[in-house]
Length: 112
Image 1: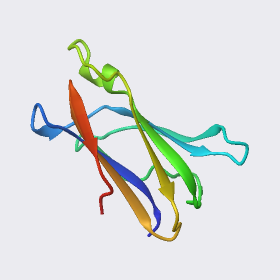
Image 2: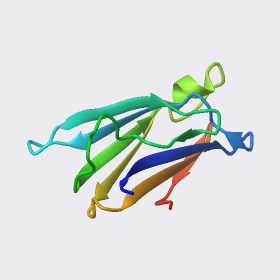
Image 3: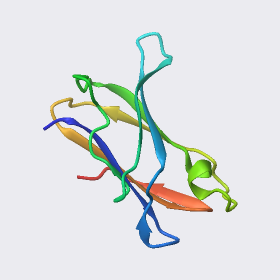
Image 4: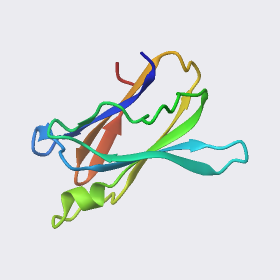
């Protein structure tokens, strides 16, 4: 099954990051960004399907923007937003982008 999903883990707490706003955008042919979807991580820190409403995954550049400042409020954090830019070359495969998060750092990778 093709598509895009994400999973956010709060490494400072050792728990899933529930309630993180996530925006998925695709680069247009003109070079700008077009919003594809906007959602919030569930109680397990997941968004299982970022493509909805019949939206098909395309071979293109995408970016996920995580509202980390909102998530950490009222605690201070260094990165108020985290944007992960990635390329989909094979639209027939699934793309999972996990985010490991703390108030002063983050890591991401191509998941499965």
